Length: 277
Image (cartoon, rainbow, N blue to C red):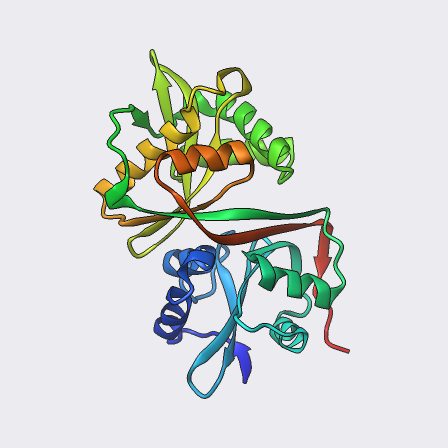
């Protein structure tokens, strides 16, 4: 039976998603941070589950900010339409998840995304993280203009947002986002962030070095310093996906190993989920 997840399903959802942790971090992180109660937080997520007699076989999530996320091993086109049916009428902007699963969604829906990128997925046991003395700090109000420029560059390079989105992300970075900056001579030179956390696992995102400072290993240094801080707070493992070959090489240099592929798909414009015919 396909149904909405409701309060009381948290343990079963966590157990299922934890069995596929590397490609479920957004689903798990949103569940851990926001739960299943109704909320207007942008990352609060509506979960649809394939309940197979008390055993979950697939999960589809839709966040308030319009992103679909799936974990559905053995996904079929029929199951795609079944999972989407309870979300009819909701608007979406795109989808993320394990590369092959998202491809089944796109094929079943006949969607033509403006962005359809498969990125290598990496993991690192933080006990193996190289030691680093790189200074790192959270951003403050005075960093907003700098971060607006950095996020503008980051979103343009990854084709994942607009200058207006960059300004919002810069403001959020100061208020409540786990963005961290590394510095040289008191000036920020690169940034990295945790974009999802579940249990003792964190997922890294938003890594950026301004073009004039590239080629010095700063991206890897920023990630290593970020994860050293996370390890000090109890994190034991890190996940990330790489938007470029250069980024992938930086992550491998600090110990990450490839474990799979992750897909990011964005629509040309927001679209509404239609009821099943």
